[in-house]
Image 1: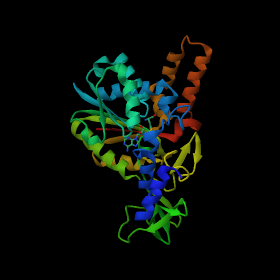
Image 2: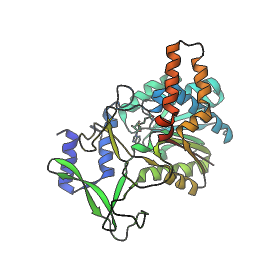
Image 3: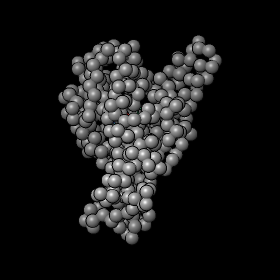
Image 4: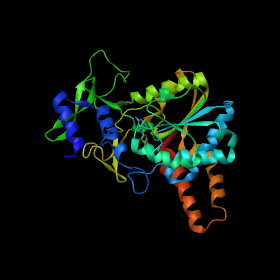
Length: 347
Ligand code: SAH
């Protein structure tokens, strides 16, 4: 049994079953053995590839989005560019290179803030961004951001935040908890107190599963208020759905393949689909406007094809093929184009 598995098992033996959110948080962020604190999960050799790692075009187009929003918000002087969950720092590097090139007057006053929980990834991000000679503010929480206009960006961030899961049994909602069966983890359903509905669908047929990601909703509320008060906008891209629904979306991925949630805690990436509908409602109730679309439509609108043409012009055939593949990967409906959704929030 791995050390993390032993530790979680001991916790359950001592204090009883734990929520899926606690299990997810331990697997991803345990200080010594968590997935993000330990592994280098992204890229060809890692467990999965994210859009910024597919091609520099992704970050370049998001850089163009930053320029547009900066102008739309009429930001003057100091402002913050805040990335949530920056991974290897690739997206921020591609955005900054673009700003430097096409909008030096936006690049210069930009204060860079990164919300990152993993010390190991913070080191990687620092190295990656060194050439830009910018001070970087690492955030443990968003509340540490300065009171000034802020453009928020997050790619595959919200899907890594811990969710709780509920299941309908005997006409009543139960929370799905992680418990032990011998040496292995298993799920157990514990009835919710009669009075607590948590806003879950009523009535629902037996077997229905619902998920709630409280940290995502809380963060979105904070971001929306910050934008309301100090100007700015937000752009969030993730695996998820545009209409709230039911179903089990929690998944474990290791080495580009699905694996079991419980087999090797801390060794697989755990994610759940992001409920953009719920996040959008939160932003709207703070007075913001939201635009929901798919990654493919969003990138094409920003000029993905034009940028690909420019990048490939005069290059050897093999390189042009690579660029074409990247376009497919990022925007084709059967690849990332429709699975990944985009939410923009703005005043
Ligand atoms: N945006 C990157 C990486 C996505 S993976 C990319 O597209 O390649 C998720 C990122 O969020 C990692 O950097 C991880 O360490 C970070 N992360 C996950 N949960 C977090 C939390 N609760 N607080 C801060 N960072 C978190």
